[in-house]
Length: 125
Image (cartoon, rainbow, N blue to C red; front, top):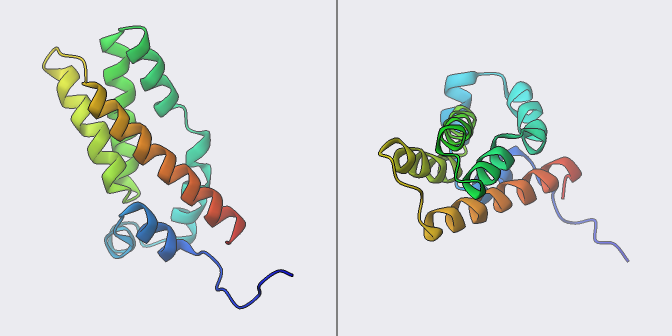
């Protein structure tokens, strides 16, 4: 038997799950429907895949570009922890070094958390 007494997983739940700041996003972007629509499309963005692939290929230029793109998207939509992880990798690449395993593990952990939370937001549970 399915429980029906639980509230649906909404946008405030999403931001709580990913350590984001919904109030800051609303203050800046004002259009909550647009924010939700863009969050639901986030999993289709290629920046994370491009970043991990370019790191695997030791292509620092394209890895930097992808990290910078991911950082910007995350900060625009208040996904701070993932944005911070991408920013740390961006800075490492900017100074001519490749990110440590710890940095890429943190990025992957935060990315996976965001993707799972987006799935819950999409499903409403």
